[in-house]
Length: 318
Image 1: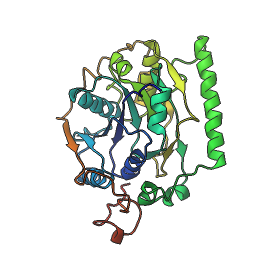
Image 2 (image 1 turned 180 degrees about the horizontal axis):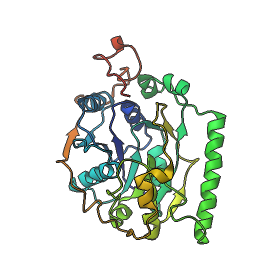
Image 3 (image 1 turned 90 degrees about the vertical axis):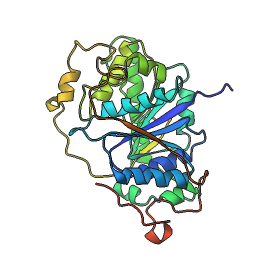
């Protein structure tokens, strides 16, 4: 078997909530990530502390990219900030795996992205939405030690299978020239893309503000640039941890949706990876583990009682 390509994990977040579970999932991988970058659109000491403690507890080196909040969410720019930091560090090949900060990857996630990404630009998985009850049962220390595993229900797996079939249909329609321009679509919170293709389309379009639809735009531009994709909805499991969400708005009422409907936007976006929108200075730091290796006998940062921690646990953000 040929060597697998490096997979660089990028975790955009603006909260420390559940960040420890994302990192525990990465510590459990059958194939280690080439790098881990947490990228933030806010400067928050709670996130800083969570990263430092997880680095020590899990034995992970974590790159932290952050800049002050702009007054509105700029998810597209935050993703690009992470990739710019990787390029500045000398990364020139491999895949970029994007995971939202409220998800936990299954043990074979990175290995499957590396394998299924062979010969294609995009890998298109999805995620299992855990219920509040399933989420509250999770304990980060038990997960790290292998004493606990996340078990999706039959209904959740059936839902993934139905979605997988729909994505495959969209892919067939695309080959016939009958699919919508961005389908099969990409889930911004879990996908991987080759670094080469990411650079070709100039990354995410930073003129998309807030969140939503910026991932559809990116996917559409990859397709327009001749990009290829592999559907992996039922093949790569990532678990979305339950939390309150904002009430959905009408899709057409969103500024991002109105921008997406324009037909004059270039394949290589004007304000992207190589041409960012103005922002405050971006800080990049590398956090190394103090002990050098994971300590599975510690309860770490999970939901155990404060007496089990090296210091009191940080509260979950809202």
